[in-house]
Amino acid sequence: MTPKYIFVTGGVTSSLGKGIIAASLAKLLQARGYSVTIQKLDPYINVDPGTLNPYEHGECFVTEDGAETDLDLGHYERFLNIPTSQANNVTTGRIYQYVINQEREGAYLGKTVQVIPHITDEIKRRIKLLGETGEFEIIITEIGGTVGDIESLPYIEAVRQLLWEMKEEDALVIHLTLLPYLSSTKELKTKPTQHSVKMLLESGVQPDILVCRTEHMITKEVRKKIALFCNVDSNAVIEALDVPTIYDVPLMMLKEKLDKTVLAKMKLSAKNEPDMDSWKSFLTRHKNPKHEIRIGLIGKYVELPDAYKSIIEAFIHAGAENESRVRVQYIHSELLAEDNIDKKLADLDGILVAPGFGDRGIEGKITAIKYARENNVPFFGICLGMQMAVIEFARNVIGWKDAHSTEMNSKTKHAVIDMMPDQKKITAKGGTMRLGSYTCEIAKDSKAYKAYEKSKVSERHRHRYEFNSHYQKEFEDNGMLITGVNPETRLAEIVELKNHPYFIGVQFHPEYKSTVLNPHPLFIRFIKAAVTYSQR
Ligand code: GLN
Image (cartoon, rainbow, N blue to C red; front, side, top):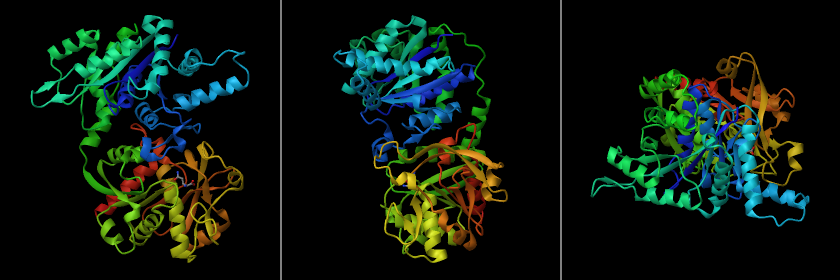
């Protein structure tokens, strides 16, 4: 069967939640029995977001195959419960890099290389790649940015060409817009939507469906007006009200019949009513918690919670599993020191030290870990958080006061976290870390094993530095155990404390694998330990 393509564009302003709308539609189509995937096209010139500061676009999400991608791919995976790959995120930088490499190889046979057709052809090729795998019946392509941005133009042109090339029922465009509310006149205003649709039309693209973000219900009259002036059917004006959680959006879209409208336009059968039972039971647990716990998320990008998106979502999944509301307290590691730590962390039921790079705020993280270790507070260290737990232990338990990671201090005598020889040769920053899935073997009688209930797992990585196994014996003799290792390289993947109710550090990023239907075992256990601790 020819795959069907759905393009999602955005108008009026950024941050309307195209990713969540795309993921919600995909979820409904999947629940009706279709195989669906989602792709994000990002108009910036970075080849991938791996080199971007989290303050720019939030977290960098990592796929199984080691692609550093936009955080929307995290939503796709959390909603659909299937992995994405390198092909699911394409940036302008990657498109140009490919075209320029082709040009250097002489592939264009003396032609002038231009935005149209060469860049647009490459965009179209990337869009079709997922369809060619034969794995998916429906491919949803989200175009990043807002219609009217200079940098989005080649993407819109590529969409226009694809719409022209494909049969009418094989491709459609959903445009996400905003209906601002004027409180003085108590009205929802449709003009910005009309303008943004006009702008799309100027590029030759007529949207088929409008999803309208709004704080108030849209009346029949307003729906009719939007339909008339934007040239769409009135059942193709979809209301997207603000809701308490992103996980409500699929059910709201179901009520609005977004999936049915899409299927009808694509001449696809609606099949069965979507099976959303497990989704609904997750929502019921999430909304009716029996416990409430406070977790401190200690990091240096806390001003922008998007920087820790997957961790926050993993808390929601694991919280529901434990019938608990997880209140996340964002704590800036730079503000933590020995003389304020008791006060700052006293109310917490669990401490998570976040991933990160560079030495800003490092000592605060170490102080927080010492507090968690000494006070038996449940602790979870992820990547840099695990590395800091190793350093804290080396300094304060083993007694190597100068212990450090060579990322922060290249001259330390006790480089308990160090770069592996093959990493040392690399100087370029982009795409050169240990990335993607690696196997981890877990020691039987460990806390990690209790969580996973299996001895072999696969987890995603994104880091350069590693636990220095040269020191393994001293750590184990003093009570910090290496309970997870990579079976090929023997690199440490998991550390835990012998005499502590719950103290685990992981070199990998479990948060990337947590989904609504498959909350991550280590997060489930951590929240469970925090619930127990909260009843102290
Ligand atoms: N900066 C550390 C490293 O490169 C940790 C990275 C991370 O937390 N993702 O190894």
